[in-house]
Length: 359
Image: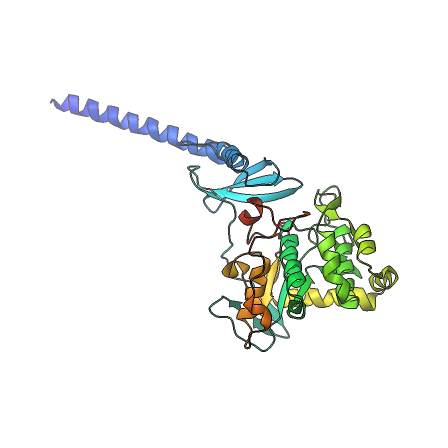
């Protein structure tokens, strides 16, 4: 090969490499400015459509899922879908082959600072639970969260079939108080701006008052409330039939109204819940706290009545009689539902929760 031929071939190769580099660079610039574009495989939007199709084809939701938006998060395709009136995030790999119905944020928990000291909420597992004479399981929820309702349904079923568990369980509520009014994570106006004293906050307060001042009515009331939706929040989140359930469960409405309207009663009791939630770094509904430590229901079988029994029995020094009898092991239904358990969709949502929208 002549020197001229070599240089000619070499120059041709360099030109081809330069052209390829320009094409790739241009493609990457276009991809960065167009999130739905993929240079080498499926676009993010195509993957989002595939996720929705997979969920619907396999009946993983009680009602058909629809695609809301697609974005990227931590190297995955984040797919926001709508099921009924609620929105949920799922994740898929960039090649569209693997779907993750949920993701756990492994960012270290924020610490809570009180009186100059810094503390981190401890966690417990089935193997590391500290046994005590009388364990206390606290479930932190908000009243319109589909998954908070799922947890309350499991708790109510457990108490119904093993009444002694009522003394080991307390449902607490997530929120804050501003200028004497309660805030809750799903309350907003039509524009999406957060508002105080909204429908969810009012229901949270109502349930707190029944829990603290009419405890024998609490479990019957919440069991009734979660059976059917009778309205919606401005953002589409459903609300239950409070009026009908107050009447059917025999709640003393005069006493309830006095509690709700008297700051030293209802608001003060709500503030205690919110302060404890802050102490334990609670943000998602539901979150379980067992004797001061965060615990996951998945370690005990999921969101079922028997998992509730198992948590309490595992933490008990002396096994009460109820520990010898299994309760319902089926995952409780999500959101408002007349049935305790619904096959398929309920199990797929275990460990998912509601969290405040990013600000």
